[in-house]
Image (cartoon, rainbow, N blue to C red; front, top):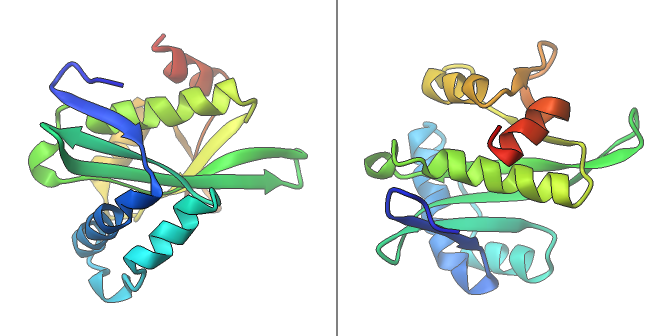
Length: 162
């Protein structure tokens, strides 16, 4: 998938493990949680190779500048599976190119195409730019939790660009 602003999105593969590790560490530093980033490239290789985790890599001129990793969840209340976005990150110097929107749209499109009724994720309460972005795409805060949910008409509308 190519973006209008000169970026591409592609599926993350096991051989991207070192790139994912680098970007996860950059995300952890941004979130002031660098001390908690303990996963190795080997961990990411194994997760991607076994398909327990799926992902996207965003590239500008062939260089990885962002990523998203997600996995399947299951709601006992609805009896249906969904996607949980574990992490999404775009390097600060490559923000405002539409990469984040393209990543979320691609995950939404996959959810809709594969019959998943929702996509969820968490956001740190101080991350106002991210929270504002999530509101713009139609995500709704779950007040009892910090999870975010994009579902139903909002999920379909976002996935189709309506």
